[in-house]
Amino acid sequence: MDQDRRNQWLRGVLDLCVLALLADRESYGYELAQSLESAGIGHIQGGTLYPVLLRLQKTGLVTTRWQDGGSGPARKYYRLTPEGEAALSRDGQDWQTFAGIVTALVGAGGPQHREGVPS
Amino acid sequence: MTDEAWLSALAAELRRRGVGEEPGRAALADAASHLHDSGEDPWSAFGPPERYADAVAESLRVAVGHSSSPGPLRLKATGIRKRYGRREVLRGVDLTVHAGQIAAIVGANGSGKSTLLRICAGLASPDAGRVTIHGSVSYCPQEVSRTAVLRPDEHYMLIGAGAGLSRPAARRTGRAWASRLGWNDPDPALARHLSGGTRQKLNLVMSALTEPDVLLLDEPYQGFDRGTYVSFWDELWRLRDAGTAIVVVTHLLNQLDRVDHVLDLTEAAA
Image 1: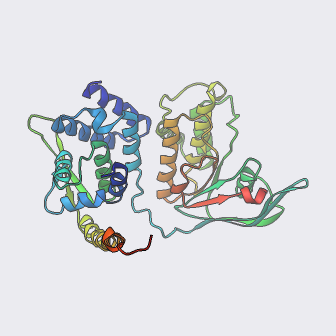
Image 2 (image 1 turned 120 degrees about the vertical axis):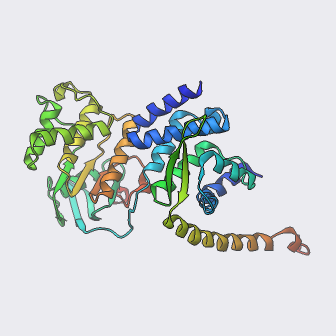
């Protein structure tokens, strides 16, 4: 996939993806990065992920708590707030509507519909 | 560069950008635990410390609860006209700013930006038009302070006295402001011995010290280094979110997407 294009898309939806991952359970930064990768989003750099987490925290959509990391440094766990849940449900629906429209448009302009068009 | 060296460089860059102690420590701890968990190299995971510090500072500056519904009206200028000799620099300019808003005045040299600000401050009279201000007003001129025989603390106490601040309170508030602009040593020097950039900081601190309802700033960042410039805008957003109405004359356009109004005077001068 074109990396520039993928990055552009990601900028618009990464916060939504993170909210969605946090819907089920709390998690910490690196685990979120792994979950995003295994979901097929691709590798997300720390430099991209943590500013998004900071913004979510700052706008009150997630809360955090620190937990001792055992052998390593302490980890910050993120959890959805009620506002975060509301944002996920509202923005998630908006995204599905929007993505549906784009899919329909792109599908309609796809190669299978171009046959017979005079050149 | 080792993880530790990268993290300490990040710590320094965060401080330079005026990121507070607590969020700064949290950002460092986040990065440290990510590096530990992932085993990645900090340069590939986070990039150069200064760029990541920019991203952190930017994320922290997200206006919390900055509502799109404006507060009470603070400044209203209508139909402002001003002529210098045969040249009319302002031809019926309007500007309205509410509490909790930033208006940027932009335009080419000679388009009347500073003149309009001086008229808003009541320091110059328009040939026509009217300015109404609700609340207290403070004006930060472009030329740096010339009260050269006073020390910075004395400036704060003098200005503070006019607003009924006690001397310790004025000094404390002034120094806190100075430190948020990266001016940390309470420099005992007389103002005339300060560098241009530092005198500009002094100027800015004095205009904000009394917590005016309306703050008028005429390109108040001449001589600032990049870190101070970033801190300056952080402070403006903080004041805006606290309800100050701000008008800033600027020729730097890269912050304009983050202000509430842009008044471009270029056309008016043509």
